[in-house]
Amino acid sequence: MNYSLMHPREQLVTIMQRIYGYGMTTTSGGNISILDDDGDIWITPAGIDKGSLREEDIIRMRGGYVMEGSHRPSSEYPFHRTIYQKRPDIRAVLHAHPSALVAFSAVKKIPDTAIIPQAKRVCGTVGYAEYAIPGSQELGDKIAARFAQGFEIVLLENHGVVAAGTNLLEAFQRFETLDFCARTLINAAGLGPAHTLSEDQLKQSDLGKNMMLEEFEPASHPSSEREMRRMICGYVHRAYKQRLMTSTEGVLSVRLDADSFLITPSGVDRNYLDESDLVLISKGRREKGKAPSRSVVLHREIYAENPKVNAIASAQCPAATAFSVAGVDLDTRIIPESYIVLRRPPLIPYGKQFTGEKDIARIIGESSPVALLENDAILTTGSSLAEAFDRMEVTEFSARALLNAGILGKPDPVGDQDILAIEEKFGLK
Ligand SMILES: [Zn+2]
Image (cartoon, rainbow, N blue to C red; front, side, top):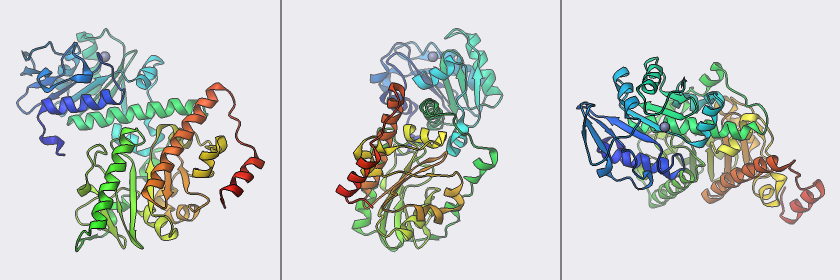
């Protein structure tokens, strides 16, 4: 799908459907706009159901001032226009009140994006605008002043958030990523202090080993490989819909033979991923003209070390990532099913995923099919794509259950004797 060629009306409706569909805005709340090359601003209307928004509902503000359309523009239009006036590079503005970010705005704290490296890269630094009455020029001036200082996303005191970008997809990705950080930090709050990454640690993730791989031109694409491409896309879309992945992060790979596999690309929106985006890796080389995920070297080492592993997933799921950010053991003994499927996932220190891929590959095995990468992601493996994906789901479900149990009381896992009985009955090593 070529998002950049869509008409502004279509882009606005598509993104509003995504925001509403993920429970990140209500029927009445939220507004988004686009500034086009002619200087016209396209914006969502006031008082129209966000769950059933149509292209004909979108308002066009010619030159920013002359209204065209069958509704009134959003009451927050003043700040949209003022942001465009102050920052000529900004071409899209998105505003909403998702509950996790509202929680931060109510306690007047900015969510720290340095909890995982990708979040800081996507969001940039986050600004903060003091309270002013909704729809007022005063609010517009306060928000626009922050964007004029160079911030790309601004938290509004006792209100919500405004994200901007050079296009609407970029603004959406910043918004979604900051919301992910807020949800993860709220989840982590019950576990202990969240660890944040230093500038040096953040830089470690920019090694770019994925792009250092040599390129090659595949002679053909056999039917079995095409089938696998379709399966991977199906699972990525599922993961995205279930919010196990964000639009910018989340990796799946599947082994094709001893030293070749398919892997998701870097920098492609997970919601729009299609078969042609996936990257074939063979003998350590990457398919010509494509950028594989940054974790491609780690995946290759895991396949080389573990002949029974045929699929690998890694993703930032907000409950499980809370454990990796707080550096707390994810105790899978909470129910037998979690222990059987996941065993006891080790917590791998930050940095190993970039420089110690072989070490991680040796930790992974039948008795450790899943690992938590500190301040990064969960890593799951399986003998099939379905098994690696299921382990990702079970990890997230178990993490959520543990977080909820912690609110109710002290989680009390299955005892050691019962664990031995489970291992015996299910033949676990
Ligand atoms: Zn608002």
